[in-house]
Image 1 (cartoon, one colour):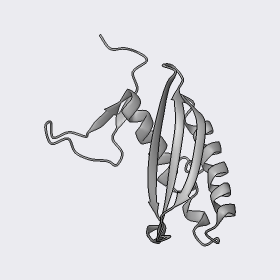
Image 2 (tube, helix red, strand yellow):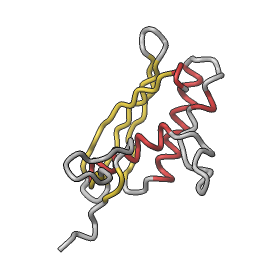
Image 3 (spheres, helix red, strand yellow):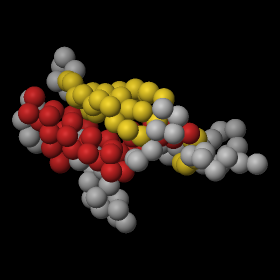
Image 4 (cartoon, rainbow, N blue to C red):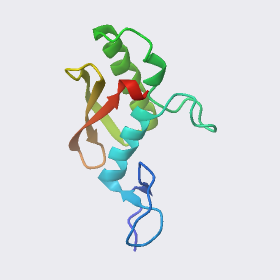
Length: 130
């Protein structure tokens, strides 16, 4: 018997499960974490059937890399996570830069609402790879 509140979906990044030969899936907390990473790394307009999906980091790559950019990124990603992943409540989102300036780190602290469980993750975003 399956639990109707279980969240299951494709793994991100997409991969094949070597043990089954099928598409690898994530469930529950791992799936929510993968969804948040996917939102952060997806361009707005990249998904054909859902043009508003994504965090929009890549559109900002030409802007000056400073505290103002980080504030815009924090606002845009925070708003997008709130809209696209209603199963979590965002508590804190911070953006920092690596010492060499080549990578932004998006740190997210959120609560899984159905469990009231606090989770954190850090997503590295290579600026030269945008």
